[in-house]
Length: 113
Length: 109
Image (tube, rainbow over all chains, first blue to last red; front, side, top):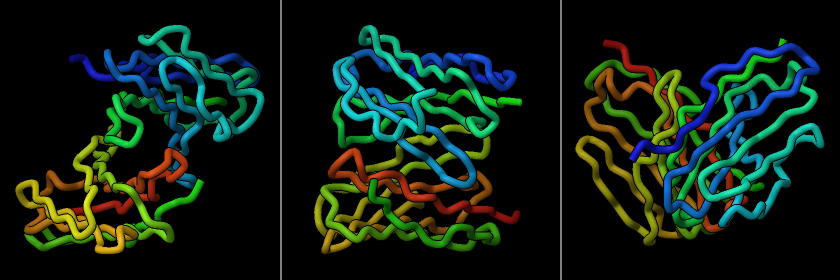
């Protein structure tokens, strides 16, 4: 299995631009999670899906953030417009059971200048 | 969501010394998970503990779950440079229980 695949690995964008992060979970995993990691706040859960349905997006910081999961093998996290404070590493993770260990992707390092 | 508290935040050890990190929750957990993140890498799932008082071992790593299921520890015997990284616990029972801030381990050769 190729694991959880995220793209791009690195993204540098200018403030105000739209950013789209992509994730392909492990086949058969019904749960998909988006996390953001910063030095100050650690790992923060942004949103999670079960069977492609968003279950809780209370961790999404603002309306500028949106996430979709159109099918079981693909999810996107979009930031529009981006701001410098959005700079962080964004991880996607998947799991076949909600309360079991997650498999994380390699992450997307986002820098907004 | 509620967080589990991890201590210490940082730990520097000489290679060959032992290392322990602790994870504490104010609420009872259904299970606890441990992850390791190497510098520049992503969190990797190590183990899950479910039962009260459970102890599991992975080579030089020993994981314990407290009797009250509110705390846990990870102990590494005779650290090696390959143990460098940040160790996170995640209290589970609800997705709202988030990851601890982690313990960053440095090993001095």
